[in-house]
Length: 518
Image 1 (cartoon, one colour):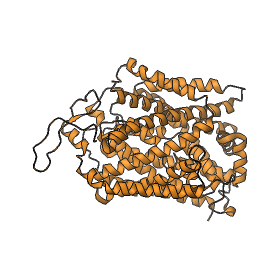
Image 2: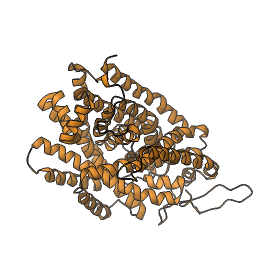
Image 3: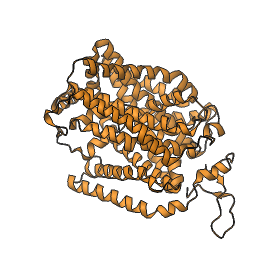
């Protein structure tokens, strides 16, 4: 079978996953088109406002699609075409599930940031931990997504020491995007980046299809040894993050949830954007394996110019000078459109934590200035160190969100349907625990011990979860109580005053605070 056939088979599988497994997610979650969304009940013209579905899809896609589905697959194909399997099935069974549940849970919890959503389901301790963990991840994302495009732009201009100039320019845009009303960001900025991204994807794919290239080299097999001897498990699954599953997405979904006018749009926007990102990852994985037909050749190129240099080389070789320039600009657009929303989400998390209204520009500046200042400081740290911590924290956050999604489905009485989230949560627990036990930024244990430790950690997490299902079922699904009193104001602590149904043999208790137990 020719290489192009493998590519199209992967694309067809991704699309089938959207139409088939996406509908499975809808049947399990049961979205309600008659339910009033936060964009309607909490409209403020800044963060909460109903926007058209098409614009929301563009924004969600561009927000989650950073350099992960470009750099990640290029690094992942050092293990050979087997990386395609993780991109396809990771997107369908893990990434799409994660994105859908994070967005829909936020929608049910009045558009709250993901740390608060997880806290509602799993309890106060998880809420505090997730707030700190998510904030650290978002700032790391913003830094990574500033450095990478700055380096790409510097490679285009070829002016010595102009990287600081591009960094300053990108951070200036991030600052404006962090404090602007979201309608300005989506209506005036997103369409431009969407066009640039479309040109990049269509151009690279067209060159691969009609340029007479021999896609893939199967002489070394589907699974190849890494040139540096690094094990595929779990390193490839952490390296290819945004192209398969990424916790960063969960920090972005609440931004979209606050502007969604109908719950029935959730599958199209949250699940669909993840599938489209998987397609972007497939394009770049295919391009990398086409131009570098051995892992050793690709490793040499990475050693010489890093992922940015490989992206530039692929673009220029496939599309020539002009087309390559447009393709590189498309790759630049990806991280910039994720970096801006990373800092915006950071502002919202801090605002939720301190219960600070964000309607006035002054209140937004109080948070945006220190957050962006910290990002500028971290941008001076070695990029490789920042990337390693970002990669692990990114996948760890995704794992925690999947467990929260599984617990939420149990609370909602989904029955066996909770396994759509529980299964990938167990899998990802093994991935992140093995990674942190093995790698240099972790405990540096021998590989076999790390694998066994990761497996045992995943098994222990599953046992604890299954043992706690009754406790989850007995908790009141908080969003139902909130729906019964949709105009109930938030208390100074950021919780809601709701009314819980009576327990057997007891009267109804009013004004019960649910902020701790979720």
